[in-house]
Length: 103
Length: 170
Image (cartoon, rainbow over all chains, first blue to last red; front, side, top):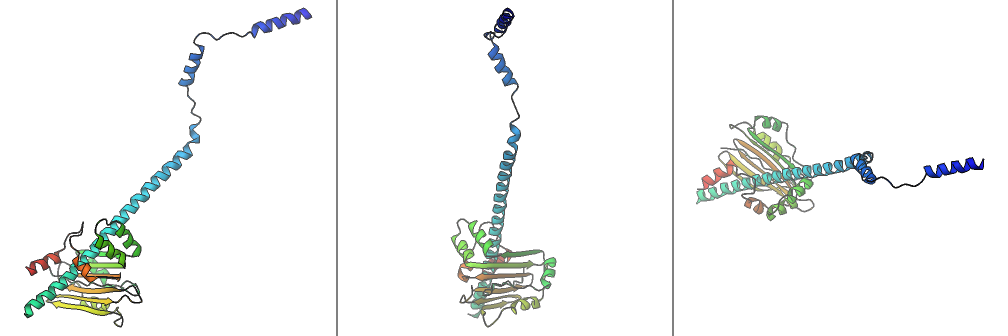
């Protein structure tokens, strides 16, 4: 029995003996890792990317709307003031003509 | 081109003039029309978008509200003076003071002012020509001299009435 166990032990030691990897093994492994990258991480970024896009788009849209409204308000205010100014000048011109005629 | 102008500015209650229903019909008949309503917030926004015109910014900041309605018609007789009178009758003459009333041929300009005592103050001006009707209402502190000096504001063309006046004055 002891001889059988000893033989089995020798066979196991022989089978499990540490051996150096063949030449180029590490390079080949690394090449395969690079060729087959893992993409299982990207779904986790989708919500963050989507949120960033929404924020950026909303912000740009808000600024565009604010700019457009401001320009519209400016244009309306200038039209109003210009119209007012013209009517006042028209009144003054009428008064001026009346004074000239009365001289 | 002959025009009818009604220019109005109201103050104290800061209430805009209530335009009669007939003004909706005028808009359909007009070849050109302007309808501007700017409250304090919009005036502030407009002011912030005006870079260099300090006088204009000051005027906008002093005003509480600005309302303008203007109609230009292809021919005379498209509106009735009763429309103008109905607007003028909205002014409480115990508070408003007529500061100018001029008439020449078919043109008329009337200005009413309310002192800025208890309220924000303001003025109303009615001016009329046969083919144009304009109504402007300004609530708040208004300086007529400053207003009349405004010329050549960016982005605004001089309108026909002003050209006509310049021609007449020559």
